[in-house]
Length: 394
Image 1 (cartoon, helix red, strand yellow):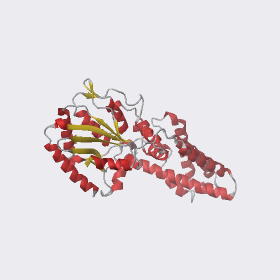
Image 2 (cartoon, one colour):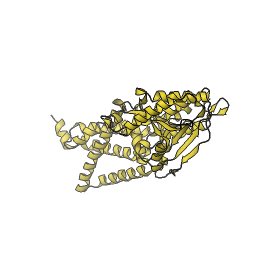
Image 3 (cartoon, rainbow, N blue to C red):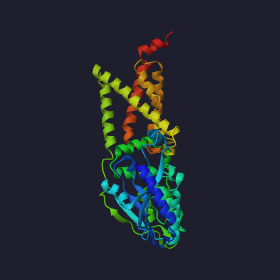
Image 4 (spheres, rainbow, N blue to C red):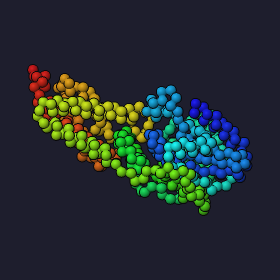
């Protein structure tokens, strides 16, 4: 229903924009919204506000719309095939949502002439028409912020960004961590670090860094058209008291380290209960890491998420750990060789941990060390077991 009204409003506002001939009384600004609590809103939002004083029009256009009623929603989302769309809202309605969620909202009024304003309006109008409203979302290259950035900068002759919005050698992963650390989301950060591959560890250019709302706002603050500033100073439309300098980033490391240490010491106890418990933990450990490995392979090869390609986490989340977890029940002869190979791979990963072309989440280090320990112990255990000796005898 919300999407239906959004479509109707978009058609109405598009018609209003189309009928707009004289843009002298039009004001255009960029709206930047702070992060929210929901997963899809953790990195903020960007939109364009258009005010026409003669037509009494105050509308916000944005490119972050999606609906849960699309067929196979979760499958499309997982595979990177979910369509996002442009939408239009009355300014008070747009603001109400962010006020309720207590999210910061900033505005930067564009200091441009009527010709540039008309070009931006025409570009917005084009984006509101038919199939032009829809696009396939790409986290790095094509999102709600890059759509606004392109419309603004490509339709203002001579517009350019003068300042560096991020320090040298900054990567996309650094920018993602910046948002998640500040928002106290260490477990989501761990999950994203597992699924996102080495592509996001490349150094970003100044333009590429502005795929994030806050950094586009920073770039726009000092952008120029010839010798004049392109936008006015950012004003606060709503102060949501966002979290700043949040702590707790090492919680996953501490939790996983405690679990790994506990498993290590329990596995050294000779009592029957401890050995049974260790066997269960081994199966669970290989089952979970195997499933993670299969998910990594799926995100790499079966989706359109380019940010999930070339993922070195596959070196510890071995997909073959899944059948190995079930094989622990009958203990076939090949388990010894498998655990030996897995131990070699894991040892090489640990040796190259800080030199890989992909930044590995430090919270995974206790898990990887525990895996190496279990691989070595189980490889030796099954190599010399009577069951295996019997199977290899003639």
